[in-house]
Image 1: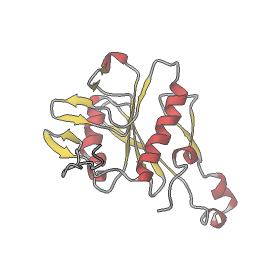
Image 2: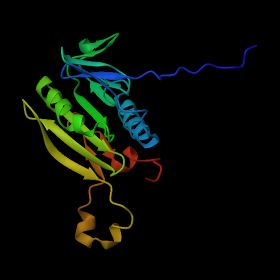
Image 3: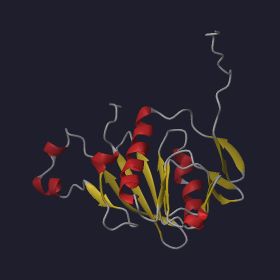
Image 4: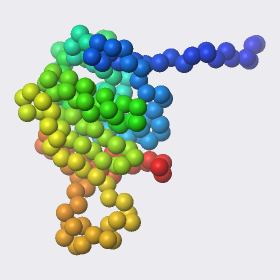
Length: 194
């Protein structure tokens, strides 16, 4: 039995079509990047069990235009006619991108613009390092920043006044589901120290 395993010289590289150009996705995501994406997937997968909308974790192709084929970190699709064997064809209702240094510019510009024009109703940019969630909502033609939610570091909370502490938001709602309470701590649970 041969116990020597051959490793390919080049690792398989996933890519997206962005503005008609093939763009290699960032190097293998970090533990914290994956953990945040998995946490979000778990929140929605649990909530949507038995409902008409379908959650998709990382790895599913999203076909929006002839020049824009993305692989979001997470999405929710409520129109099952958009779901095909090779991926999702048409705008999901919710798209989440977990920020990486190599993709942050694309996530904030071209991809956000395309998501907005194609009809994505809500778009999240999630930063594992800063523990923030930026929520953008569609106005009919573009995605506009609705709110930024942040986890306050433990050292900062004692420095806040009582009224400031009372104003700290620890839970929020996705505009698609009024009865889904999302805790920031659930999104950022289990992360390694930065």
